[in-house]
Figure 1 (cartoon, each protein chain N blue to C red):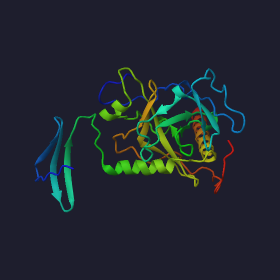
Figure 2: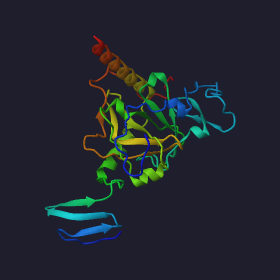
Figure 3: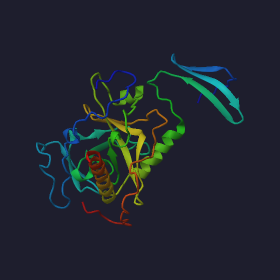
Length: 205
Length: 86
């Protein structure tokens, strides 16, 4: 939808946003190890950068696919460059990987997976300025998901990440609405007990 | 920091469009009314702290756990679809 200046009334998030891949440019992470992800995205011999991540091996990130955050997520304000990783087996999640800190990444998902009805996104003047919102821009919204090894799974519907796909600027915002929780459970019951790996050095990808 | 002393019913103006009204003073609590345009963000400080804490908790999820929960969510969705069609 077109954004007017000021309040953004009830963004219809049922409407499909562009497939993540369309603006992520990352179909899949490169296999770890000696095989470099050359050509996994294609057409990017010049300005690509390789990001060595803890969990996803080497990611080949074309510079124009970076997600820029002038202020990183709250508590991570020093992290400014991210990339969204999409994998079929992660659906409905995407992985928001910090490029500045390979150890840091967040599972995110569109809020409509966990929130029925229109999601009442509100953007302040500062939010709009930081996203450089212009007439006609459509934003993408992602809730950060917390997953604990004991099976707790929750989505932060109160403080979503808002991305302007046009310029790839993103920002964590605070949304009004007492019904929106910072820690909204996303599974009706506890899932099968998850294996807890203590002190693992690496994860098989 | 600018420090202003106000009595009950007195106001503070910030710029042309923001007004803060002292509505009630009781015990150790002050009730404030805030008039501001909708595009000015007004939140309790704690909400930022809670989001910050939640971000910390969320960072560094293991891919293994992520895959498990993603699979559980997809299975739940399939199950709901199955119920709907029967």
